[in-house]
Length: 190
Image (tube, rainbow, N blue to C red; front, side, top):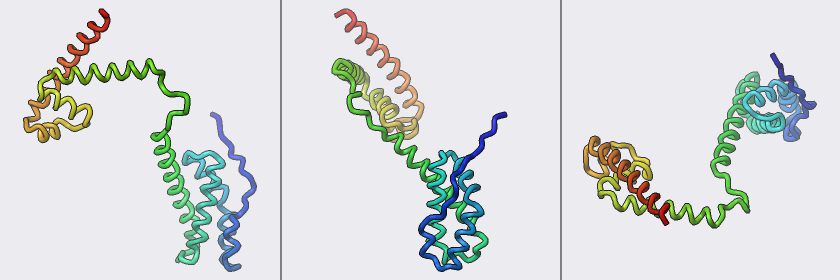
C-alpha cells in the first residue's frame, strides 16, 4: 500500500496577528504553531492541492484573528479554524464547479464554416419535421424535450391527461423519426 507523506514548509503566522494585543497575539500564535500542519493536512484531504490548502489555512487564521475578541471560549479556537477551513474549501470547490460550467471556447476553436452550415441545415430539417407533426404532438415534444417539463406539467400546460401526453410524445417521436429519415434519404439522392 502506497502512503503519501506531506512535506510542508515551515509555518509562518499571518501578518495580521501583529495588530492584536500582546496576550491575544501570543494565544493566536500558539494555536497557529500547534495546529498549522494538521490544518493543512485537513485542507489537502478535503481535495485541495498543497498551495491551495496553505492559502485556506491562512484565510481561516485571518478570520480567527478578526473574530478573536468575540470568541467566548478560547479553547474552541482550533474548532473554529477547522470549521472555517471546511467552509472555505467547500466554497472554493463550488466556485470551481461553476467556473467549469462556464468554460468559454478558446479563440480559434470555432467550428468551420462547413460545420456551421451543416448544423444549421440539421436544425432546419428538425424544425421543418416538427412543423409537419400534429399540433398536440409538436406541443408535447417541444415542452418535453426543449422545455424539460414533466408529463404532468405538460398535461397541465396543454390541457390533456397525462396518458394523452405519453401517447402524443410516443407517436410524435415515431413520426419525427420517420420524417427525418425521409428528409435524409431525399438529401442523399441529390
